[in-house]
Length: 359
Length: 226
Image (cartoon, rainbow over all chains, first blue to last red; front, side, top):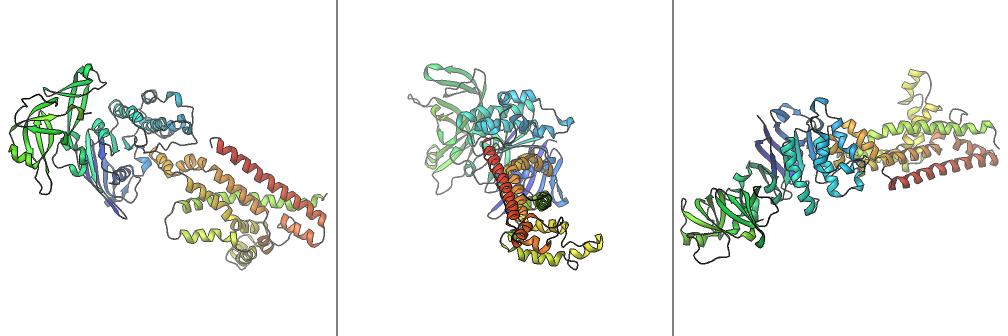
């Protein structure tokens, strides 16, 4: 069974990591949490870089650590690929030597990464004879991804690999990571504090909050849960899988479709038929009991059914409502509105989503 | 111009310095690595002990070495039993004394080099399937090359200029313990200033040239890759 099981504890002065995870060891798993929540420490435990961690870590039934039996497989025997926040290339080696460092130490029987294809995919073919200090940060990070991939890891760990890059570079590298996972078939664990990145990338989501890593599941399911403000704050809201059906060039809009419903978003460079993920923030969704009669500026009015209403907490004016519009959508409304509309599960409502709020 | 006999102390000094430097680089590497990486409480004690020869009068160090290496000393007695020779007033004894005397000059540059190394670079090597020893030779050593160069040169030149410890432990036996600094002192005592001039001048020029080469290399290294 391809599972990644982590039951791991680590104590440091002023910090405690407590991880209880059982997630699929395939696809892309995003580890999400605020800065200092313990995401990186969790990743380092998986890699075997934290000798003081105790507990159990196993990947695909291979035990990497089982403290109760005194088992601790050292880092270099785990076959993990690690991409750090900084590229960490070896400064005394050319790009080619850096790329081949892990490959040369891989047993022949495990060398199945296609060298040329990886180099081409990362677009680093022209850099091979140069030294790291003569590369831009984005180029260095791509080389470091290539170096990790060419060591033929059974698990690729990435610690905010895009954090040190500017936005255009990020957009350049993000698709690589997806392609690496899909085409090279390497499971990826990806640490990030950027909701935008994980919405684009992840299949599975692990949430880390103040050292606690116990909440995990399919990304759509986690994002459509009620009461996740603790983790997501302002960016709570469901993810919709849609595909492009038309562009309205005149107004710079793209029209998407999901479960027979239409959704206008600001113009995308995607082609007709392409799949796209839309993150609908719950605070941008408002509800009404009937479709608005008078003309409205809101382009997206979607018929939906109330599934669940979040707990109304005294002292908080807002409450979350979970809707079924083919797929789940979250809306945040005031308690006063909830009272005025007298919403209850099963009821039919119309959700308004401003197109300008969608990316 | 000194006769051939007068140059013997110079060769002896060069021999002593070479042997000591090679041995020190070997021994100091694990010690410096440990000092650079450990968080153990004993670290400060070890660091202080390593640094002692920097500030201790050579006669003090020499005095204790004389006791330890002497025929009844902790090292000297077993050595006498094993080899039937004494450690004091021999070349071997001088090497042991020089190892201690020049230790900080080799350990400290290495420790600095190891400490300035990016630890992530080492972790990256481990994650690329390199076992610890392999990653030391393939990643740490090449990046610490300048530290090694500095350590070797400081260890070598410092051993070359050794006087007080040699006098205490080695005495003044031609061809065995009569190193260049002792020979110069001898010449001055016997008012043979001409010979003293020659040897002192040779040592001065030699040491200067070595340091010049090192600093030139270091400057180039900063611009070039390594």
